[in-house]
Length: 502
Image 1 (cartoon, rainbow, N blue to C red):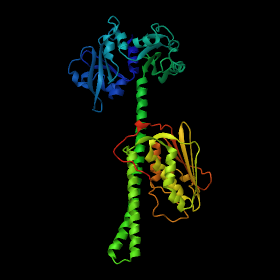
Image 2 (image 1 turned 90 degrees about the horizontal axis):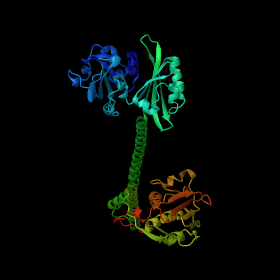
Image 3 (image 1 turned 180 degrees about the vertical axis):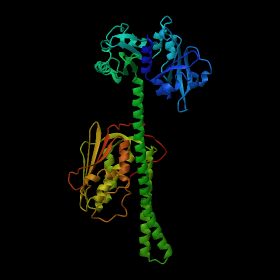
Image 4 (image 1 turned 120 degrees about the vertical axis):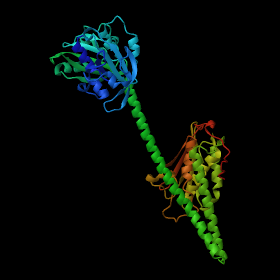
């Protein structure tokens, strides 16, 4: 191989820093890769500096041919851990040594050096140590030289073939266009292709080769497999997206936590304020009339009960969300649970003279679940329906089931819920209100529906606020799978007691 051709190829090598040195280590040729990797220009090194100046650990003598791990000094002063390959050259480059520097980790050049054919010429060995496929073609596109990697990829009879034709079975037609443009414009090109035969990605760099008179005499083609690099980049992008998503979730959770703390503080303060105010009145005025005293004590009892319900609901919700809730799964009849809840609420129904329409369309419905927790859900929804129904109003309870699911629809004829608020009623401390009625001091905590949805979701079901059949009322639908998708093993039994809604 001629000296000028060797220089052109070395100058075109990507991702490594080749240089030529004499017997004393003085740098006689420095290429573009060296400037990219270490920051030095050729005019700063050639004939002036030794390789040992860049790699102090080499001391005064050069090592024998082989592969080494070294620390080199970048032009800006920081150290780089690199791989160094030393190769003695022959033929037209006799008397010079090739030093190849590249970043760690890359594939093993040492293995290629130790497995080379000792009878091959030194100038062929220069290219055989490279992991990239290197092809040299003349001005007509005829392949003149190829290293071992190129012969392995494109076949042993690559030499003498037209380069575009030789590579056509491996690369797509865009490579032919790139070859023609390099030959026509005398300018280098880099393109990336996905090989259809192996589904791998390669980066192909095509550079024109010039003689000492700057006349184009051919081109070099260097192919490098970048599949692992692209997969790593994809993995990094995915991990970056996952970190962004996780950060967004953490910010959302933090915002929810702050809202939760603010709401809890407000909800706890209200009954405590009433209890303290009326207690102070009784202490300040011990001669208060008996009727007023009974009224004040009644308010204190009501607010104490309200405070107790609020604390119990907060603990329930916290236990469910943290996974520490006690679940007691048993096989039970959901239609019987509906009947039980109706009987519990019978006094409230009579007090408002409500018309109750209860329909079990398909008879008993056995399923596996925490009976008391599911009754708690039914009790919450039915008591809401009674609370918001007008005097002499109507409440409809309708159950159906098949082999796959159980459905219970509970509907009232109260003021209803606006479409835009139907999901909001399941938020923490959200209360359904009747604009025509004053605030009830015995109203719920605003956590009942939030807890109910959590319980239903734990059983693999759903709790929805639907369009009522008789507007403007509200309609809630409870749907549970049969059997519960998360069977008995899903539930964690602990010593915490399950509340009895009755």
